Amino acid sequence: MKIKTKLTLQFTAIFTGILLLFCVSVYYFSSLYRQNDFYGRILNRAYATAHFVLDADSVSQQQHALDQRLYFQMLPREVVKVYDQNQRLIFSEGDEEIKIPPGLLNQLSQQGEVRLDQGDRQVVGIRYLHRGQYHFVLASSIDLYNLNKLLHLRTLLLTGFVMALVTVVLCGMAFSRAALRPFLKVVSEVEKINASDLHRRLTQAEGQDEVAQLAQTFNNLLDRLERAFEVQRTFVSNASHELRTPLTAMIGELQVALMKKRQTEEYERVLKSILEDAQLLAQLSNGLLQMVQASTDSSKVQMTEIRIDELVWQACAEARKRQPHMKVEVVFANLPEDDNELLVIGNEALLLIATVNVLENAAKFSGTDPLITASIEVQPTFVHLRVSDQGIGMAEEDVQKVFVPFFRAESVRDISGHGIGLPLAEKIIKLHRGSIAVHSQLNQGTEVTITLPKLYEIYKI
Image 1 (cartoon, one colour):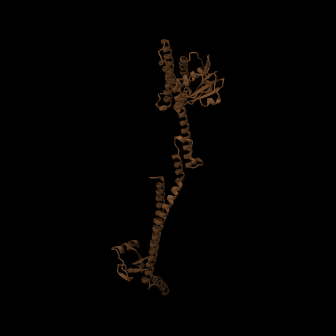
Image 2 (spheres, rainbow, N blue to C red):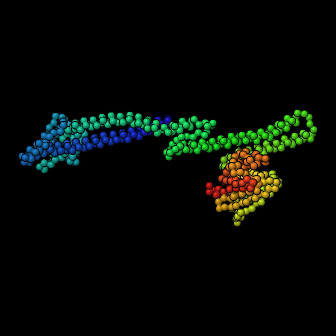
C-alpha cells in the first residue's frame, strides 16, 4: 500500500472516529435530557392529579380552581389513574390503556416513587398521603413533540456524518498528496541519478523540515559515493598502469630474447631483468592484498596487547632489511615510569606493516645517507609515533593527495615505488581507531605522525 493511500485512510479513520463519537454523544445526551425532562413534567402531572382528585374536599374553592386549571393542562396522549390504599382504582382518565406490571403498587408503597418506560410511553407513579392514608397515583404520557425533534436530530446527525465523511476522504486525499509532494519530487530526482552523473544533487535540501534533512542526508551520501567512485577510478587507472609497466617490460624482454639465438650470458641478463620485474609485480600484488585486508571490518581482525616501543624496534629491524643503508634513531619524548602506559591494542602484523611502510618511505626519500628519527610520545589518552627525515620533501598540494592509492608526488617520480605505502598505512591505522598525518616541505623533509589510542581508551570506546 502506498504511503499516500495509507495516510488518507488513517486520516479518514481518525476523523471518522472523532466525528462518530461526537454524533453519538450529542444524540445520547440529548435523548437523556429529553427523557429526564419529560419525567419531571409527568411527575408534576401526577401531583396535579392528586391535588385535583384527592384534595378537592379539603382545600378552599380558590385553591381547587387553581388545581383544576393545572390539571386540565394535559400532556399528549395522557393517562392518569388513582388508587386507594387497598389498591382499588378510584379515578381514571385517558383513552389509552397502560400496562401496570404486577407488584408495581407494592413497589410504589415501599419506594414512594417509580419510573418506567413502555416503548415511547413514560410512566411515573407516586405515593400520596391523604387524610392519613396512602394513595397511589399513576401518570403516563408520550413526548410526541420532543421525540419528533429527536428523530429530526438523528436524521441531521446521520446526514451530516455521511457528508462529513465524504468531505474528509476528499480532503484527506488532497492533504496526503500535498504532504507527499516534496517526497515524490525527491524520489523523481533520485531516479534520474546514476553512476555516470553522481555530481547531481537534490534540490529539496534547503530548509529545516524533514524533507530537507532527508535531501541533505542523501546529498551527503552522494558526496561520499562520488568521492569513492573517483578514488576507485583513480585506483583502477593507476593500478592498471603500475601492473602494465612491468608486464610490458617482461614481454618486451622475452620477445627480443626469442627473436634469435643468443649467448648464455645474454639469456642470464634477460632472466635477471624479468626476475626483477616479477619481484616488482609480487610486491605490488602483496600491497594490494594488504590494502584489502586493512579495509576489512575491525571486528574480524584479531587484536592483542602490544607495546609500542617493541613494535617500533621490530619495524626498524624489518625496514633495514629492505633499506640496508638507512639509519634510525629511536627516542622517547617523555619516557613513562609505568610500562603499561606504552600499551596499545591492535593486530601486530598489520601495525608492523604500517610502521615499516612509513620508515621505508622516509629512507627512500632521504637520499644516499638517510638519518631518520622515530620519536615516541605518551599522552594521557594517546600514544604518538613521529617519523621524521631530512629528505626531499613534498609540495603542499602533493601532501593533500598522499593517501590516494598509487599517487606519487612530482618530487619523487624518479624514485622506485608504487604509491601504496601511505594509503595502506592510513587504512591500517584507521582500522585501529587511530589517525595518521603528514607534514612536509619541499627540500626540507617530511614528518609522519601516527596516533593510536592507549589500551584502556580502546576499552572505553
